View (cartoon, rainbow, N blue to C red):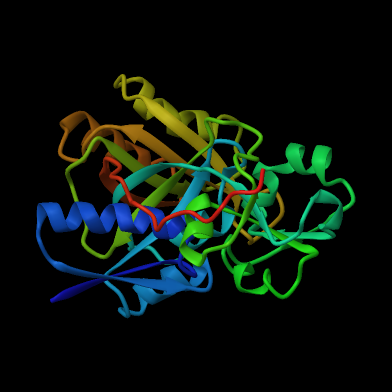
Length: 292
């Protein structure tokens, strides 16, 4: 059986790089046939999994600069019981790609909104005159560059190599330690790992209700590594909470905490119990001459 993995495309995106990392890990660990399936959006990647068009989906959920990817969290909640089976932490490297001879000729820069935001300071300093236009992905506009010398794109250097496009300036990200966290989702629930992700809503706007919910972990010395809120979309001021905690679902203390947590919440969803996949070298086609 061939395993199909959905990810945000076209080829050359960071989501594809994360999917290739997982593809390599699967082939080393299990030796299956694995095909990558590029999708036009993060949402389409998850819908393809929910509708059984693929067996897995790789989606970005958090960036070290811009924080969480809202559409990813919202859909993982909505499409539950899709289950997180692994995570990948991918270093992010942005380059300015264009056929323009110099900065003054670039009138418009297009990329995914996350990429534009992660390069905001550089763009304000070096291209204050350029319009910033959002695209579905970092590689969606690369095919238009050759016909428009006034257009620039922000994408990974790997994408420029893949499409044989000139890099005007490499490393334009605002922070050199930029990285993105990706979740690998499937439909098989796992109960082994070192991170547990869950989400819940609270029954009413009662003072201290969130504290009471979180204290079930504090009393058992279970570390919470991340907590954030998202609107429920039912009413202004109503939120659902995403929590990551250290541990395994088979641990008795974790089981007791989750059992007690149910008494404090309206809806509780266990999103996954998983480990981090180590990165592998992705390789690249030879680079064209760089213009710096």
